[in-house]
Image (cartoon, rainbow over all chains, first blue to last red; front, side, top):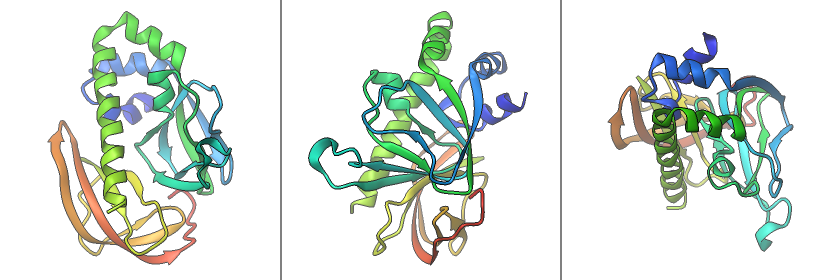
Length: 149
Length: 72
C-alpha cells in the first residue's frame, strides 16, 4: 500500500486508477543509494527506470568520454522525478551517469521487461504511462532550455 | 496538489534541478537542492495543470553551497 501511495504522487503515473497503481506497485522494488554511489553509468546497457522517493540525484554526461565533451552536470533530480526512462523507451545505452548527492537516496526500481509485460497486458496502463513519460521528457527539455537562457 | 518545479540559479555554476513539492512555493521560500540551499526570487506557471499536478519554473538565488542536511 505504501508503494501505491508513493506512485499516486508521481506525475508519470497520473491517470491510473487504484487497481492499475496496485499492478504497477507489484513490479516495483525499493533500493537505497548512498552519497557518491552511481545508479547508472553512461554507456552501460542497464534497463531499469528509477523513481526518486527522497534525496537528490546528479545527472552527469561526458564522464566516460562519449561525445568528446568535457564531463558536466546537466540537471539534479529530486523527489517525484524519474530517471532511466530513456532506455526504457528507446532500449539504448545509458545517456548519462546518475549519482546520489545526498546522504542517502531512496528510489523505486522498475525493470523494463516487467514494465513492458504489464503494458502489453493492460493497454490503458501502457497508454497512460508512455504519454506521461513523453510529457516528463518534454518537461526536462523545457527545463534545459530555461537553464541555458 | 503536487508541484513539479524546474529550478534554475542564474549566475551560479549549477545545472539547476527538477523536484516535486506538495505546495506552490512562495517568493522568498528556501529550497534544498542537496548541494545548495536556494531562495525563490521568481515563479511562473510553465504548463497548464494536469490532474493534481501543477508545473512551475522557479528562478532562484544561491543562499549557501554544500548544503547537506541529509535527505534533501
